[in-house]
Length: 144
Image (cartoon, rainbow, N blue to C red; front, side, top):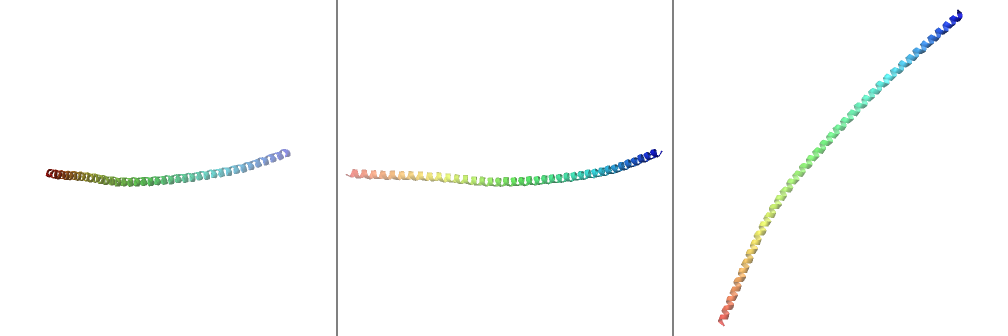
């Protein structure tokens, strides 16, 4: 029995060694599982931080874009208002120019009438002078 006893002790020692190694492996596996869980949690937290940072950056870009659009709208409105004001000035200048042209045309017509009247008076005066000269020549011719 002593061989059987030694064999049983040896087997018992092997079983204990196997159980110890199994516990050690289970402890290592449990520690690895905890580390993996912690890594997963850290990765999830990092992912969440990155998502939050990306969302914040997106929101900042959206706000900056809205502000830029607002500035462009205001600049456009100012440009339109300035153009409308300039158009009003141009229209007022055009009306004034049209009035000046009409006044110049009226004065030109008056001047043309005055010139025509002066020409007519000059012709009448020349005709009267010629008649007097002819009368004078006739009288002189009759005297001779």
